[in-house]
Image (cartoon, rainbow, N blue to C red; front, side):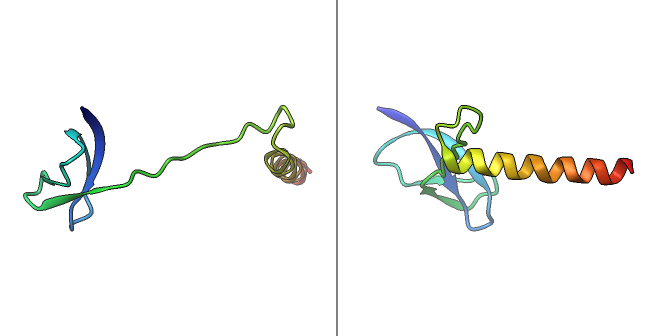
Length: 75
């Protein structure tokens, strides 16, 4: 079964390829060998419901800071 995997060459280029699980090297666009890397996964916690207390507190803190900046700019 083929999966979408990320590959990175020594020059820092990152490319995606559909490959089988046994493929660990591929050729980069610059001609160098690119090694398979683990792709980072980014997730964002939704702050509005209150289900994620840390995200809610950060959102409230950032909102207060923004309101203060806007009030200061409008004075």
